[in-house]
Image 1 (cartoon, rainbow, N blue to C red):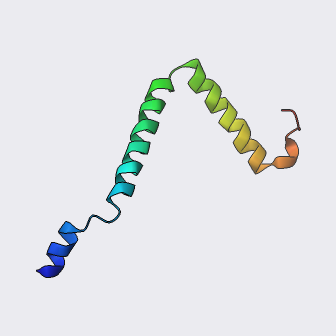
Image 2 (cartoon, rainbow, N blue to C red; image 1 turned 180 degrees about the vertical axis):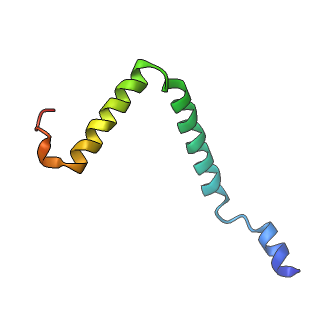
Length: 64
């Protein structure tokens, strides 16, 4: 019973969980706001180029 009480009253790590939830909420709102805009499309194209260059670095030019 003491162990259960200790677990229920333990607040170590609570701040980390709260900050993590805030970061995920902000990221989700940002994603919803831009997912169907031209900015969202441009960012998607840019990330595709980045992932292609990471996968095959010698196929990317220095200025592309």
